[in-house]
Image: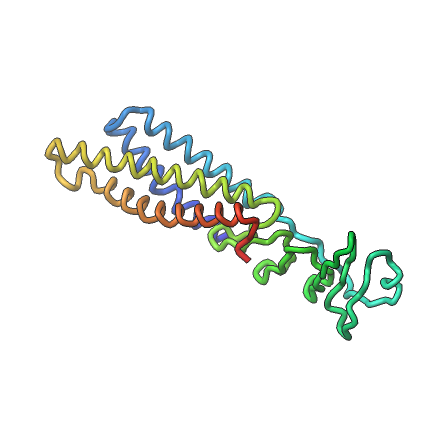
Length: 215
């Protein structure tokens, strides 16, 4: 939960500070703070949906797998001739698919399933373990992860736009730097985080287009 709390603090503290500043000083039309609040709520909704949706964790076997020659009699199943029985070949429509045995979860992993060393679970269509959210990104929560990145990018752009507008307005009125110091700090943070998030979002869209995952 520590990574999630840190992410929430980094996300909410500058956004709420800027919204309060805009509402109290009435520097910009009230529609803009409302837009920031809306984007912030959308980012939070997608974040919690990503965190609390099962990424595709496969249930671990209670007992260790015991090899039995009866498996050879199953239709379409041929075990590789290996002493450790680490692979299972499932045949169908003239094709053979190799399923690797996970020694941690004691099961044969389906295709594109990877064992997460952090969570100690096998996850279907595993993409990566997100250090900022503290959860695995896999088959069932990947869409919410993309939605979180997209809404967060929009929020960073909106924050940056509001900060630039306030700084330009205050500078034209001859106000001192202290009058818009908060906007400078928040805007610089939004610019840095926004650039990194936009690059990350473009990378994941390219993976999605190619039918690939990070791992």
